[in-house]
Length: 88
Image (cartoon, rainbow, N blue to C red):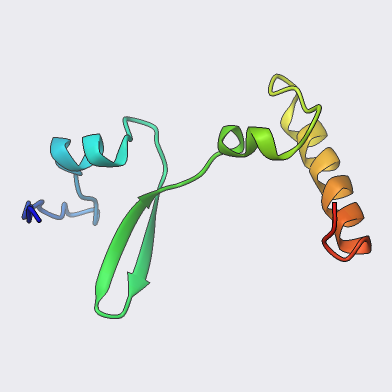
């Protein structure tokens, strides 16, 4: 197991720069969103999932549709699943 220890300074605005190696490992770039999770005495940084990550979960949804239409179809899909007791 290779251990990687990197450092970053906190700016006066409370911001940090993720080192290049970390950005590469997380597959994030400028504009990406990350999540900070507290696990016991550690903070874990993970890339946030986007609608594109869930593309295959909902059938017949065109990724070019606007956000409101996708959200409406998602609510309908989830409602049906809940009504069926989670069965497809």
